[in-house]
Amino acid sequence: MEKMPWIVSSQDVDALALQSYSRKEKSLGVLVSNFVRIYNRDDVDLFGIDEAAAKLGVERRRIYDVVNILESIEVVSRKGKNLYSWNGFLHIPRSLHHLKEEGLREGFGTSSICINSQKVSLDDESEESFSLTPDDQDNSSLSKLDHKKESSLWLLSQNFVKMFLCSHDDLITLDSAAKALLSDSQDPMHMRTKVRRLYDIANVLSSMELIEKTHIPGTRKPAYKWLGSKSLTEKGSSLFNSTTESKKRVFGTEITNFSTKRNKTDCSSNYVQNGYNKHVEEEKKPAAKSYVFGPFSPTGASKKNNNNAGTNNSGRLQDLEALSSTYKPQYCNQDVTGLLGHYTEAWNKWFAELDRK
DNA sequence: GACTCCCGCCACCGG
DNA sequence: CCGGTGGCGGGAGTC
Image (tube, chains in turn cyan, green, red):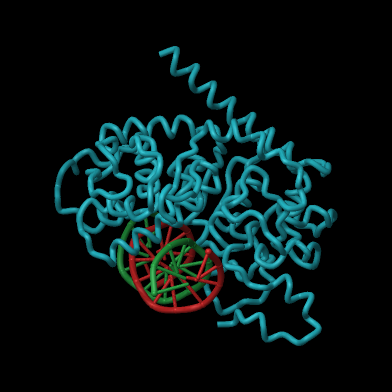
């Protein structure tokens, strides 16, 4: 409705620059990057939906998306109503391992699910921590709840990951995945919906650098490649390229988006609101205003419009940003280092543990 | 024109 | 009955 940037008076040229609507800037991938950058710190443990929505400047609904996907690889875990714990990357290795075992057990390892095929049984998972009712083994009714669960982002994401972990093909296209994960029903409508969801998932996984978008060798057909955890470490170096500037990304506009509430009615920008406990004092560090994609540059990280550097709003998360580092020219790299270190450490620890058994 | 996938309506659930 | 969740698919951006 009200997103028509071009109806601005001539002297808003400046403002125009920073409000040129770009869908990408609101992508889940970007959101996840910001999510990580804000929450992936030692002093963060629990967080709530509202708080996250406020900090990230998006509506709650989007947080649910992100959180559900992240939960599938245990980056976060749900603790209760409106309460999640941030696990960071620590549990990813373990999580992936579980998913792999589970996937193999469930037959995800079967031949090429890649280019096209309609295998993969999948009827349900068996997530460990929350033992669900033991009674519902194979009632094929698949009623309501089951269906709802089957098509949850959480499960879909896990299954998607399983496909990568268990199959020998390293390229998976979204529609082959959709087909496989749909297990039957060729209903084109269901396919479309499934694919949409896979896009969502793929975006966050890409953002987490667990997968990467490429395309099938011969064709132009897009496909995803599993990078997994190792990739993080080995490509660490590539992340150190010092073109810090190009990695910067200004979100001024969208980060402060608008209404945190679901009602579009009030697009009043004063959503200062509750959830955001702690210091909300306004910015003190103008430079930290822009979001920097550290290791998590979303698929289309290189943005051209970084001209709209500072300007109003977006004061909220900046203080967090601020303390994220003491603002050195290359604090970006530090982030990476820390992150990778963290990650590798977890990975190794996990392996050691595994060995011991 | 096909591919992406954001947006937000609204069903559902747990309290 | 209400607020938190989150499936779902229309349709707008992108390529």
